[in-house]
Length: 115
Image 1 (cartoon, one colour):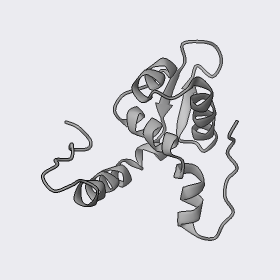
Image 2 (image 1 turned 90 degrees about the vertical axis):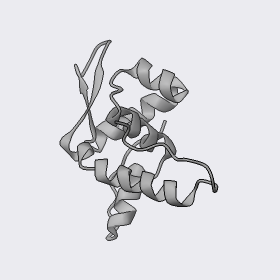
Image 3 (image 1 turned 180 degrees about the vertical axis):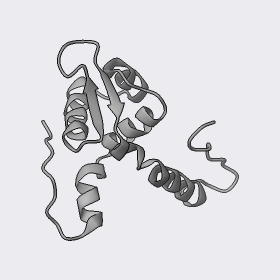
C-alpha cells in the first residue's frame, strides 16, 4: 500500500510532485472537485480498484487535501479541504494546457471545470 511521507526537497515542484505526481491522486481530486464524496462514487466514476483507492485516499488525507467524515465507520464522505480547493486554478491550467497541446486537430476538448 502506498503511503505519504512529506518531501523535504528544497524544490517546490518536487514537494508538490510527492503528493500530486500520481495519476490516481489527480483523478480522485478531479472527481472530488466535480462533487464525488463517497468511496463507491470514486470506484464507479474512475474504475479504480478498491485497494488503490484506499491507499490514495489515505495519502490525500495525510497530505491534508481530504478529510474523512466521520473519521471512523461506514458511509464516510471524503471532503475537500481549503488546501485542496486552492488547487482548482492549477487543475484549470492543466486542462487548458491539455486542450491546447494534447488534442488532435479537429478534436474538441471538454471544458474544465464543466458548467
